[in-house]
Length: 242
Ligand SMILES: [Mn+2]
Picture 1 (spheres, helix red, strand yellow):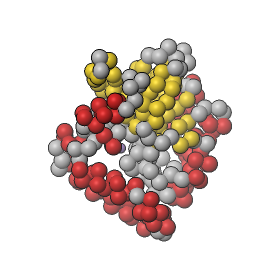
Picture 2: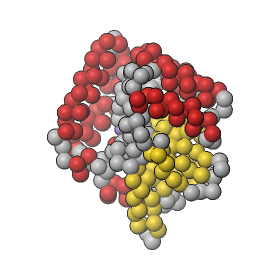
Picture 3: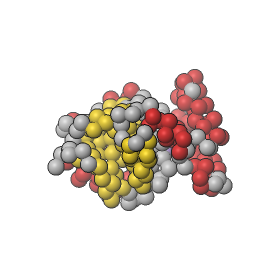
Picture 4: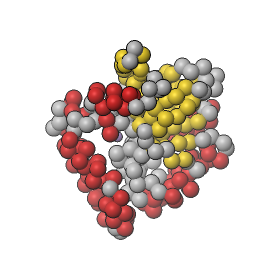
Protein backbone atom coordinates (compact mmCIF):
# COMPACT_ATOMS: atom_id res chain seq x y z
CA UNK A 1 0.00 0.00 0.00
CA UNK A 2 1.34 3.51 -0.74
CA UNK A 3 2.83 5.14 2.33
CA UNK A 4 4.99 7.99 3.58
CA UNK A 5 7.81 7.67 6.13
CA UNK A 6 8.57 10.06 8.97
CA UNK A 7 11.68 9.85 11.13
CA UNK A 8 13.74 12.06 13.46
CA UNK A 9 16.81 12.06 15.65
CA UNK A 10 19.07 9.92 13.51
CA UNK A 11 22.08 11.74 14.99
CA UNK A 12 24.37 10.63 12.16
CA UNK A 13 27.98 10.36 13.27
CA UNK A 14 31.00 11.65 11.35
CA UNK A 15 32.34 8.06 11.44
CA UNK A 16 30.69 6.08 8.64
CA UNK A 17 31.31 2.73 10.28
CA UNK A 18 29.13 3.71 13.26
CA UNK A 19 26.16 1.32 13.70
CA UNK A 20 23.71 4.26 13.54
CA UNK A 21 25.03 5.35 10.15
CA UNK A 22 24.96 1.77 8.90
CA UNK A 23 21.35 1.28 10.05
CA UNK A 24 20.24 4.56 8.49
CA UNK A 25 21.97 3.74 5.20
CA UNK A 26 20.13 0.39 5.10
CA UNK A 27 16.90 2.29 5.70
CA UNK A 28 17.69 4.69 2.83
CA UNK A 29 18.65 1.80 0.54
CA UNK A 30 15.79 -0.58 1.38
CA UNK A 31 12.81 1.28 2.88
CA UNK A 32 12.95 4.79 1.47
CA UNK A 33 12.68 3.82 -2.24
CA UNK A 34 9.33 2.09 -1.54
CA UNK A 35 7.83 5.22 0.05
CA UNK A 36 5.99 8.11 -1.61
CA UNK A 37 7.99 10.61 0.43
CA UNK A 38 10.38 10.80 3.38
CA UNK A 39 10.18 13.38 6.16
CA UNK A 40 13.14 13.91 8.51
CA UNK A 41 11.96 16.10 11.32
CA UNK A 42 15.12 17.27 13.02
CA UNK A 43 18.50 16.14 14.33
CA UNK A 44 19.47 14.14 11.28
CA UNK A 45 23.07 15.00 12.13
CA UNK A 46 24.72 14.83 15.52
CA UNK A 47 26.31 18.14 14.64
CA UNK A 48 26.38 20.46 11.62
CA UNK A 49 28.76 23.39 11.83
CA UNK A 50 28.52 24.54 8.23
CA UNK A 51 27.99 23.16 4.72
CA UNK A 52 31.72 23.16 3.93
CA UNK A 53 32.51 20.83 6.84
CA UNK A 54 29.29 18.80 6.61
CA UNK A 55 29.36 18.04 2.90
CA UNK A 56 32.85 16.62 3.31
CA UNK A 57 32.34 14.66 6.52
CA UNK A 58 28.91 13.30 5.69
CA UNK A 59 29.65 12.60 2.01
CA UNK A 60 28.12 9.10 2.04
CA UNK A 61 24.68 10.17 3.18
CA UNK A 62 24.74 13.23 0.92
CA UNK A 63 25.33 10.91 -2.05
CA UNK A 64 22.52 8.59 -0.97
CA UNK A 65 20.06 11.48 -0.60
CA UNK A 66 21.00 12.81 -4.02
CA UNK A 67 20.46 9.39 -5.57
CA UNK A 68 17.00 9.07 -3.99
CA UNK A 69 15.79 12.57 -4.90
CA UNK A 70 17.10 12.19 -8.46
CA UNK A 71 15.06 9.01 -8.74
CA UNK A 72 11.91 10.86 -7.77
CA UNK A 73 11.61 10.47 -3.99
CA UNK A 74 10.66 13.77 -2.35
CA UNK A 75 12.63 14.22 0.88
CA UNK A 76 11.77 16.96 3.35
CA UNK A 77 13.94 18.09 6.23
CA UNK A 78 13.28 20.16 9.31
CA UNK A 79 15.95 21.65 11.54
CA UNK A 80 16.62 20.09 14.94
CA UNK A 81 18.37 21.60 17.93
CA UNK A 82 21.68 20.07 16.81
CA UNK A 83 21.52 20.69 13.10
CA UNK A 84 20.04 24.03 12.09
CA UNK A 85 22.91 25.43 10.04
CA UNK A 86 22.33 23.60 6.78
CA UNK A 87 22.21 26.16 4.02
CA UNK A 88 21.88 26.36 0.23
CA UNK A 89 24.88 24.12 -0.55
CA UNK A 90 23.42 21.27 1.52
CA UNK A 91 20.00 21.45 -0.11
CA UNK A 92 21.55 21.77 -3.59
CA UNK A 93 23.83 18.79 -3.02
CA UNK A 94 21.06 16.51 -1.73
CA UNK A 95 17.93 17.64 -3.55
CA UNK A 96 16.22 17.75 -0.14
CA UNK A 97 13.48 20.33 0.43
CA UNK A 98 13.47 22.50 3.53
CA UNK A 99 10.48 22.28 5.83
CA UNK A 100 9.91 25.06 8.32
CA UNK A 101 8.50 24.01 11.70
CA UNK A 102 5.77 23.62 12.71
CA UNK A 103 4.70 22.18 9.37
CA UNK A 104 1.12 21.28 8.65
CA UNK A 105 1.36 18.64 5.94
CA UNK A 106 -1.49 16.98 4.13
CA UNK A 107 -0.78 13.28 3.59
CA UNK A 108 -3.41 11.34 1.64
CA UNK A 109 -6.02 13.87 2.72
CA UNK A 110 -5.00 13.69 6.38
CA UNK A 111 -3.58 16.87 7.96
CA UNK A 112 -0.52 16.10 10.07
CA UNK A 113 1.36 18.60 12.18
CA UNK A 114 5.12 18.02 12.39
CA UNK A 115 7.80 19.66 14.48
CA UNK A 116 11.11 18.65 15.97
CA UNK A 117 9.79 18.93 19.52
CA UNK A 118 12.39 20.97 21.36
CA UNK A 119 10.20 24.08 21.23
CA UNK A 120 7.61 22.20 23.32
CA UNK A 121 10.05 21.55 26.17
CA UNK A 122 9.15 24.84 27.82
CA UNK A 123 9.89 23.64 31.39
CA UNK A 124 13.59 23.70 30.58
CA UNK A 125 14.10 27.45 30.80
CA UNK A 126 17.87 27.36 30.37
CA UNK A 127 17.53 25.27 27.22
CA UNK A 128 14.93 27.65 25.76
CA UNK A 129 17.14 30.69 26.47
CA UNK A 130 20.06 28.96 24.74
CA UNK A 131 17.81 27.96 21.83
CA UNK A 132 16.78 31.56 21.23
CA UNK A 133 20.38 32.71 21.31
CA UNK A 134 21.61 30.00 18.95
CA UNK A 135 18.83 30.64 16.45
CA UNK A 136 19.50 34.36 16.44
CA UNK A 137 20.30 35.39 12.87
CA UNK A 138 23.25 37.57 13.79
CA UNK A 139 24.74 34.86 16.00
CA UNK A 140 24.46 32.18 13.30
CA UNK A 141 25.79 34.56 10.65
CA UNK A 142 28.82 35.39 12.80
CA UNK A 143 29.37 31.73 13.67
CA UNK A 144 29.39 30.67 10.03
CA UNK A 145 32.05 33.32 9.32
CA UNK A 146 34.48 31.59 11.70
CA UNK A 147 37.16 29.31 10.27
CA UNK A 148 36.13 25.66 10.03
CA UNK A 149 38.40 24.38 12.84
CA UNK A 150 36.98 26.99 15.25
CA UNK A 151 33.41 26.00 14.40
CA UNK A 152 34.22 22.32 14.93
CA UNK A 153 35.84 23.09 18.30
CA UNK A 154 32.85 25.14 19.46
CA UNK A 155 30.44 22.46 18.27
CA UNK A 156 32.32 19.68 20.10
CA UNK A 157 32.37 21.80 23.23
CA UNK A 158 28.64 22.41 23.14
CA UNK A 159 27.97 18.74 22.59
CA UNK A 160 30.02 17.76 25.62
CA UNK A 161 28.38 20.44 27.76
CA UNK A 162 24.86 19.45 26.76
CA UNK A 163 25.58 15.81 27.68
CA UNK A 164 26.91 16.83 31.09
CA UNK A 165 24.03 19.23 31.63
CA UNK A 166 21.33 16.71 30.70
CA UNK A 167 22.72 14.11 33.10
CA UNK A 168 21.99 16.38 36.06
CA UNK A 169 18.52 17.36 35.03
CA UNK A 170 15.21 15.96 36.21
CA UNK A 171 13.53 13.69 33.68
CA UNK A 172 10.25 15.61 33.59
CA UNK A 173 11.97 18.91 32.78
CA UNK A 174 13.34 17.45 29.56
CA UNK A 175 9.96 16.20 28.34
CA UNK A 176 7.40 18.29 26.48
CA UNK A 177 5.10 20.57 28.43
CA UNK A 178 1.49 19.39 28.26
CA UNK A 179 0.09 22.93 28.09
CA UNK A 180 2.43 23.81 25.21
CA UNK A 181 1.17 20.76 23.31
CA UNK A 182 -2.48 21.70 23.92
CA UNK A 183 -1.88 25.28 22.84
CA UNK A 184 -0.26 24.15 19.62
CA UNK A 185 -3.09 21.73 18.85
CA UNK A 186 -5.62 24.44 19.62
CA UNK A 187 -4.11 26.58 16.88
CA UNK A 188 -4.73 23.81 14.35
CA UNK A 189 -8.23 22.57 15.20
CA UNK A 190 -8.55 20.63 11.92
CA UNK A 191 -5.51 18.53 12.76
CA UNK A 192 -5.74 15.41 14.90
CA UNK A 193 -2.20 14.11 14.53
CA UNK A 194 0.92 15.72 15.91
CA UNK A 195 4.31 14.12 15.24
CA UNK A 196 7.59 15.06 16.87
CA UNK A 197 10.91 13.66 18.04
CA UNK A 198 13.61 15.21 20.22
CA UNK A 199 12.71 13.64 23.58
CA UNK A 200 13.74 10.15 22.46
CA UNK A 201 10.65 8.70 24.13
CA UNK A 202 8.72 6.88 21.38
CA UNK A 203 5.07 6.60 22.30
CA UNK A 204 1.55 7.34 21.11
CA UNK A 205 -0.18 9.77 23.47
CA UNK A 206 -3.92 10.42 23.31
CA UNK A 207 -5.17 13.88 24.15
CA UNK A 208 -8.78 14.89 24.57
CA UNK A 209 -9.58 18.35 23.35
CA UNK A 210 -12.88 19.98 22.44
CA UNK A 211 -14.61 16.60 22.44
CA UNK A 212 -12.07 15.13 20.04
CA UNK A 213 -9.31 12.59 20.56
CA UNK A 214 -6.00 13.86 19.24
CA UNK A 215 -2.82 11.86 18.81
CA UNK A 216 0.71 12.84 19.68
CA UNK A 217 3.16 10.49 17.99
CA UNK A 218 6.63 10.64 19.50
CA UNK A 219 9.40 9.20 17.36
CA UNK A 220 12.41 7.45 18.84
CA UNK A 221 16.04 8.22 18.18
CA UNK A 222 18.24 5.81 16.22
CA UNK A 223 20.37 3.77 18.60
CA UNK A 224 20.58 2.09 16.02
CA UNK A 225 17.16 0.42 16.41
CA UNK A 226 14.27 2.83 16.24
CA UNK A 227 10.61 3.31 15.41
CA UNK A 228 9.70 5.25 12.29
CA UNK A 229 6.21 6.47 11.57
CA UNK A 230 4.44 5.07 8.53
CA UNK A 231 1.47 7.00 7.20
CA UNK A 232 -0.54 4.70 4.97
CA UNK A 233 -2.63 5.95 2.07
CA UNK A 234 -5.79 4.74 3.85
CA UNK A 235 -5.08 7.42 6.51
CA UNK A 236 -3.85 5.03 9.20
CA UNK A 237 -0.63 5.70 11.07
CA UNK A 238 1.73 3.16 12.53
CA UNK A 239 5.01 3.23 14.47
CA UNK A 240 7.17 0.50 12.98
CA UNK A 241 10.45 -0.89 14.29
CA UNK A 242 13.56 -0.50 12.18
MN1 LIG B 1 16.67 17.20 19.34
